[in-house]
Length: 334
Length: 133
Image 1 (tube, chains in turn red, cyan):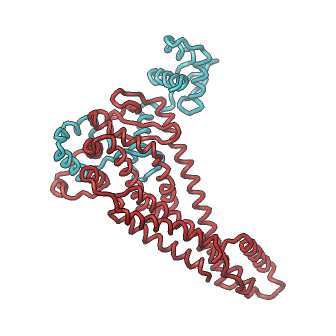
Image 2: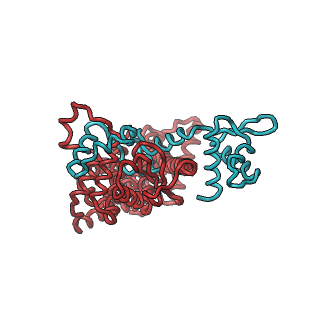
Image 3: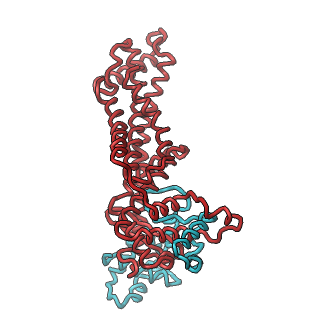
């Protein structure tokens, strides 16, 4: 088996435990931007490496049966090779269907069948990855279109939250509808719940989301989760990136408003929907609550220093390797 | 908000307040202060019908219009998407914070009081309470 295919397989398999590791690490909370970049590199690397490895295994298998194993160590997806593989596959299929003039097709062994299955799986995965991205983009655009249409009929402005739209509902909600015609939406419940300074902090947080287009960061991870709903890794990645994006917006808002106001707003909105805590839970509460809100509030009130230059350089190197290695294995002759 | 958008909204308000389906003329009468042409009202109602916000039915020679859903139903739809209780993150919207419940919410209140937001109980039992669940 060629080196390229081995490298691709190693990266494809290694990405899953790496994602587990990253999801449970503590350092991302100190540098959310760096962690998000690493998640993106990991996701891209996994996709390219898995598709490449499957295609590579299948392609070398098929070309070997025809070419007698010669020249199987070249680049996996070089143009000429791919055409040759396709021709070989077609030839195989024809011979199989015609019965090859009476004689048994000896080269069509179980191993070749497995390799053909790998090729098909690679193509299917590529198609699925492309399809889910398109489907996710369509779903997102449709949901936003609906939001804007409804907001146009229902929402109104309020001097307490300049530039935002207010919806008359008692629940505490604050969110933004990203896009070219973006909007920040605040519910009447939130207006009642928060004071002026806290509302300003919420607006700063939401504006940070809109300005940095954090929705585009989330989109591929949401798409991945839609396709691999059963996968714990996909769920971890999605949850972790969503949290990191919130932390980025928190950091941005903190530059404009006191951190304490934002923390208060987070706590109030978070606690608003809970109703009364059951009596039995009271004793257990107060100590360690490992929810996302608590993590964000802790970060705001007790900010930790960012990662060191060396750590950042190391992360950059890892991310660069993740992106470049599978691409190089696919395109460059070794 | 552009003029057409504002008109759509005003016309929906009229329809939501009326117990019965209304003709174009009746809608126009309710908006006399705007001095709208009959065709303008008809165009806007047509747009609203195309978007699915308004249903129309024949009554004699005229069309009668009524809202497809109540105002409350649309607000509920907005909030349901916003609060996203399914736990399934969608990239369509980014939320400020998700309301939590039970012991977690209690812990948040404890933290609030420690921060000096001592008026939490009165605020939390205000209009916002419980509605996020």
